[in-house]
Length: 352
Image (tube, rainbow, N blue to C red; front, side):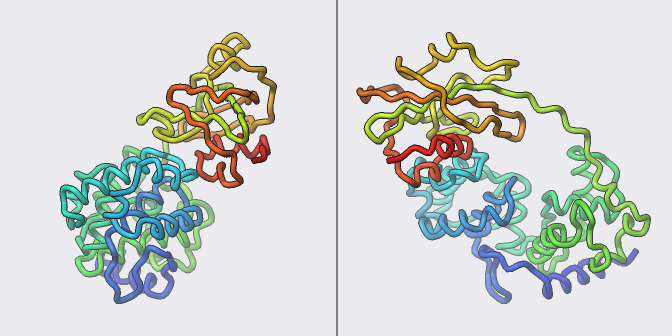
């Protein structure tokens, strides 16, 4: 196997020729903006590049710097985030912007250790910002990088516990020159070449360094524990209409979809059957003549499946209900809601 310096040089040479053109990535010779790096890295957690691009640009247009984002209303941030999922990221994004603005005078800290003290910034994001925006030679490890390093050294410690072993193998590879480019190069390599299935080993700049390629065992790495079966939660949700408006509930600040607007419903608990008539009638926001409405049958979250039934009701009285708001039914309303609720509105095909 070649030296660590040769490995880094080979990867950077490949990156210079083949790097992806991403809206948050600085052009060659330009300094990366820590705000843009941070925003993109938070959005990219558990989300694809293709999905993030549109959201990133809309956020940047609306809040072009950290001070603007810090002064935004959390409700507006959550609304702009709608559809990206993992809404704790949006709440932490807003809280982090406020801390940077109020505690750090609007300036991002320039080391991974200090960045990690901010809301929502963990090991990965702190290292990514420090390496890409400030040139700190720290290892940056995401799912793509885990796969590359596990194959490179045939690391058979199963994930997620094996991440520590992978990190220890990655750290000595990070060059002091261009550590940010090295981090982005590994991300690009994992996305474009060292794919989970059918990796393009024949054009990989790491081919002469990779132990898994030499033993033809690429797809055996990284080793992952067998996933547990996801439980199923079943709910009845309520679409209550009054004069071109729909009743939406503001969910609690903490927990799943925290702080977002959505349809009122029965509790989201794991169960074998849907709530009985008595249960859902007691949970309904008002007494009304409810009728069955079309709804997506299943929405899958990270840790569980959600099966839904939907009830439609029309009321002549716009009652004030705790934690609920009457929102105008506009063509764009679904775009402002979490995906699970957006799908329900789209299935209803309600008009203004």
